[in-house]
Amino acid sequence: MTDQTLERSIALLQQVARDHAPAVFASSLGLEDMVLLDLINRHARSIKVFTIDTGRLPPETLDLLARAEAHYRMRIAVYTPDHRALEAYVRVNGINGFRDSIIQRKDCCAVRKVEPLGRALHGQRAWVTGMRRDQAPSRSEARDREFDAARGLDKFNPLIDWSLGQVRAYIKAHDVPYNPLHDQGYPSLGCAPCTRAIGPDEDVRAGRWWWEAAEHKECGLHIASAHTASTEASLAGNAPGAAASVA
Ligand code: SF4
Image (cartoon, rainbow, N blue to C red; front, side, top):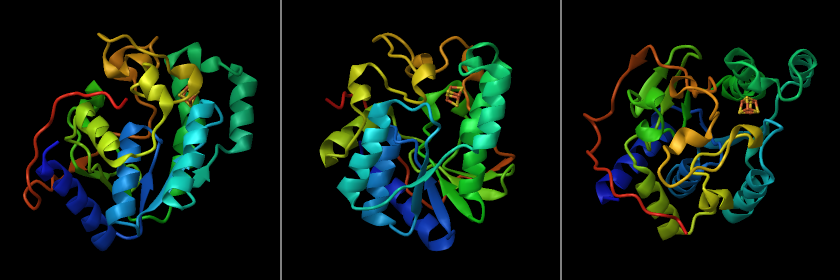
């Protein structure tokens, strides 16, 4: 990773903390989000952190949540699905109904992820995510600063230009806690029943909702923005680096 890449991300986080409070970081506890958690702890501590426990996360992810809280000596707010909406979904669709159709899968994500996210973002001026442009075809047009028109607040993606190799290099260099599943073939992690390990020649997102076409592979957390405004003009440029493993 170049110093410019890192400096650009830090500058954006500091800008968010200074000019867009109250701002929150929505952490999935994935590799990118562990990098952001580390950066926020070092450079922008006024940005609050939360995660969503969907009820279907692998135990390794919940263990990581506890380890991260101990490592950074902080409490990470945990949002859970509305129990009435979840019970209604399961009553109609079954406990694994998300496998039966794309609509049922997106409905499950809506109940378990999107609704809690909306509650977590209520009253905020901005939210921060660990989204990277090369994570998925649906993210190829994403920018480091967007306006989340659906939710009515600014959205910042400080790692948008980072490669997976840069993310892994940062984690290794700074001894950042991360999910051991990433060393077992899971570059992208989500709920246990919707995530599988991938082979060395498969795309990073191939292990998420693998029974669906690539263009459907979003859970509704990252709705395409109506208006985007890059901060390229005010912040330094960057360059992607080569891939490397964490372990
Ligand atoms: S990832 Fe799977 S289990 Fe998790 S909320 Fe979405 S459909 Fe449901």
